[in-house]
Image (cartoon, rainbow, N blue to C red; front, top):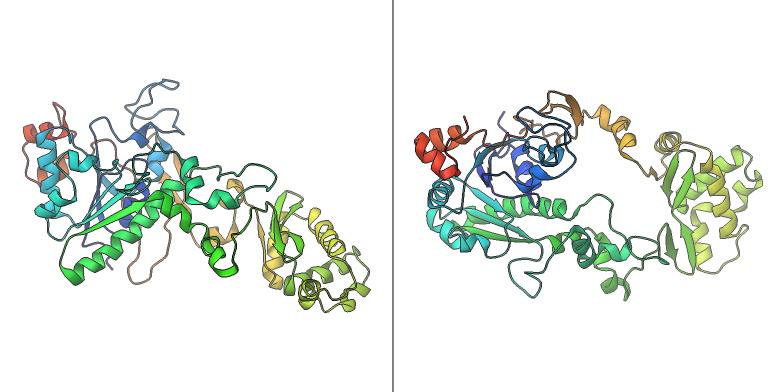
Length: 423
């Protein structure tokens, strides 16, 4: 059975700001050709690094070789890899020849940079009238911010989600692992497929302008429309949520970390039962309130048998001496909404991911085999699989430029900006 995108070819010119987009299309079956400059993508020089890999510098070298970056390895599977020197005419002509045979181009150059090289959308659509061209930039191609300097921190701030993240009495925070370009890449993959559907309808080339700032705005979920719905924005509340006049804690310390739970409705009714069973509250509590409706009574100012502080204290005491795994298993068994705050070790051991076969064994460039995150979906009719892991620098120069385009070894070397093309 063929994969969903197996008929299509994607030219991936992105660096660390867009590589996930090509990988997602590759996972869906597309033939993704990653095109790097002769010195390699910037992501090959981004940590963490393998201690050593064949053909690289010695361990501890200040200039890591091109096959040591685990970050590059993580976001470039299901891609063939070539090098092209786009600052020289043979390299540019080779790219245009590839565009003639491709369906998608994805790039993450600064605004107008590809046009400066003579490789912008208007030029490439002349080479292929049905091409889908996707450009990933911090703020889009135009506008007052288009040329601003940028970082993951500024994108998270200007996109909006930082306004909701952190404690209200302290400065806002971003997520600890950089996320902005991953969200932008995911939106780019969706935009590419949407534009392709449009191209099939119109028969015309399509340009997709992806703003990382806008992508981060989407991560706010209902926070994007809060003002339109309720007349004001959500406020940063840390581990709490404001429920009318009362503040309800959402994050509770447990024996080995933290759990997230919202003690209202059916969840609260179960928690009160559990607390009574363990002697944390008198058994009379169970029948003293209509617990699924407790929060409505509080919001309406009706009398209640036990104060909000008493209820939250009992909840806190119940979870404090139980592990995340114990609480999660109990919540799934009893139909209660409760979730652990997981670290990487928790995720690797998460039974659901194990039973779904999510983790995949992968051979690293140094010969180690490790478990890595797997495919984002299991598709029955058009199954996804990992056909190849991240390419070595220039690994497929001869295969793509020689066999696919028919360039001679000398022409291939000229296009790659090197005296000798990789075998």
